[in-house]
Image 1 (tube, rainbow, N blue to C red):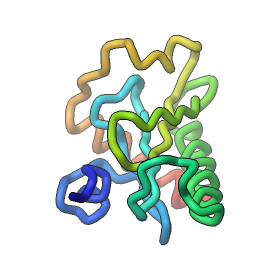
Image 2: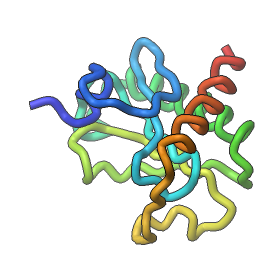
Image 3: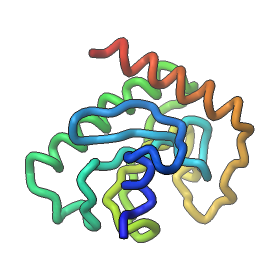
Image 4: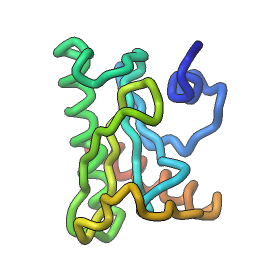
Length: 134
């Protein structure tokens, strides 16, 4: 059975897409820790990050770096935090979280409930900044 992320990539489930490459897909987390919290996933369904072949792993990390740079252009923050937990969904994914303090990366914190308009606007801004990097 396809993971929820594979279904998002296949456009079976809607998302707030930020960008994609041949190998990777980036979209806003619908239960974010901060405004602009992005998930970057490989299009190939691999459960564990370190089970990916080197080429896909490097592509995922390179694309994550580009997405993080785009986030910093449009989301006021000191840094983009990077986290890989990988227990919630059996599909490798990188969390890119705008942060101003270490506590901003605490997954035990309550998640934000942002209006659809804010999510769509945020995704569009990050996407535009990402497109400008190409």
